Length: 241
Ligand SMILES: Nc1nc2c(ncn2[C@@H]2O[C@H](COP(=O)(O)OP(=O)(O)OP(=O)(O)O)[C@@H](O)[C@H]2O)c(=O)[nH]1
Ligand SMILES: [Mg+2]
Image 1: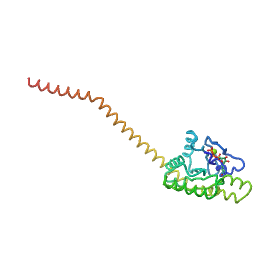
Image 2: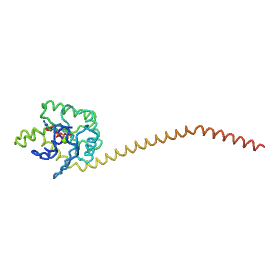
Image 3: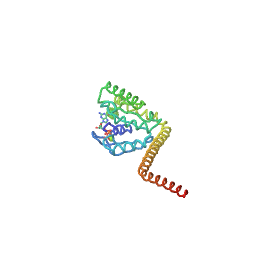
Image 4: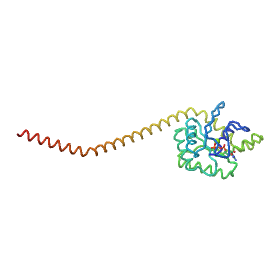
């Protein structure tokens, strides 16, 4: 939330003076919003952890996405909920997770380069240790890019690293076809695991019901056994007569 996602999409789509994706210094995006350009469809989502509806919309966006730019503002390293979200993302992209997900550290103009580098390293360490994957990270500044473009200050544009991110998108675009297949395979795996769990749960329930029935009928069964014993004894007595 408030990490600079909408601002970033404006910069990536060259909406420098007039924004297309609305930005604000508070929770702003509450619906998924798309922009189709020549090569890409950009999709802005609400931020995480504001409420369940926003989270659901973000997940819906991820279902549609070939590439995810996960924007983190550098108040520190990844928190527990961001890590949990990245873990889910990784599962959904399967074998292509490493190429399809990038972590964007935003607002680097607000901190010293040394602090940003330290956060970047820490994030990579967290991803390696907790998720078993190191995602590509980008340190960006939307505001530097905006000022750099509108005032033609090339140094600022370079220091924003937005062009580096655009180059990265171009580089991974040819891998999208493969990534879609891997994503599909991953979702089939997830479904299969869910079905296995359901089957297991049904089996457990069946055993429980069977045990319950046996317990409830145990008195009746004993009575029946006694009746059967009595009958066979009576029959043998009868034969003797
Ligand atoms: N200093 C600085 N501020 C930024 C940068 N990017 C965004 N902001 C500011 O951060 C605030 C949030 O930006 P948004 O782009 O609306 O953030 P968001 O992630 O889309 O927020 P939600 O839609 O609410 O989840 C705005 O006030 C932006 O002006 C940046 O690179 N540097
Ligand atoms: Mg937004």
